[in-house]
Amino acid sequence: MKIYRAITKFPGGLMVIPLLLGAAFNTFWPQALEIGGFTTALFKNGALPLIGAFLFCMGAGIDFKLAPRSILQGTAITATKFGMAVVFGVAVGRLFPGGFLGLSALAIIGAMENTNGGLYAALTGQFGTETDVGAISVISINDGPFLTMVAMGAAGLANIPFMALVAVIIPIILGMIIGNLDDEMRQFLVKGAPVLIPLFSFPLGAGLNFRTIFAAGLPGLLLGLMVVGITGAACIIADRLAGGSGVAGAAAASTAGNAAGTPMAVAMADPAIAGIAAVATAQIATSVIVTALLVPLLVTWVAKRNAARSAAAQVAPSVA
Image (cartoon, rainbow, N blue to C red; front, side, top):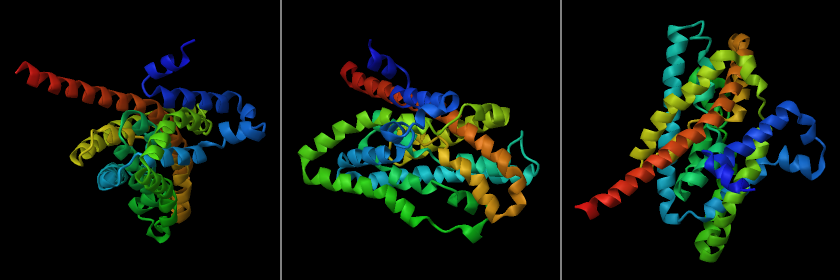
């Protein structure tokens, strides 16, 4: 059987196929992932340490000379994604106090400004460069409810999660140090990164449940499409303006799984919106699944378009 060949033919297959399998198990046979031992540790709870190992390996491939470019790309993408979330979320909040097509400002901002770091790392690792992967050190600042609280005006609890940001950066920095000290270690570690993609994708999927799509209905599906379409287009442009290829911008057009907890966190800061928090939670959870399925397709399209342009540019001089 040509399993690897079949998986890689699917857009973002190394990420998407294991993720879908994990979601299927969690939806229809969750007890299979709760038997304990190495099985539960790897297939249910293994995402974070495996992503940490992946970032360490990818960090080894980043040349110190390229680090400023990663920071520039990450800043451009993060600022753009947050800006789009604020513009659309605030517009809905002011023009449609009761919600727009069933979507509240809370749901829109919470889904749009938060990026799925695991999905981003996997896709940039497969289709992008070490510089694209390194941009996650800045993009991770939108992880959690902080920026949503700022956008919603809940400044009373808006403390910058500095240590959480540091915790994301450390594996990348350690990998960079080792890779820049020893070229053989760099080559050794970089080769291990692709192996980790399907391994951490399955437990990421094991945190999703297909039933949330039906619970949230069409507004949840619409929210996911808005996240990919609106933030995707804007982040691709921002990435290219910052010197990237657009792959990193496309890979950031998703909603993180932990964003589903944002509405409740914001409601604790402002009890006045507690009534819409439950609905917003289901809609954001649906956006997580929708974007996890669509973003790999968007990244694949951008990568293929870049390859076609590169090929055309190489042919043009020879023809002339």
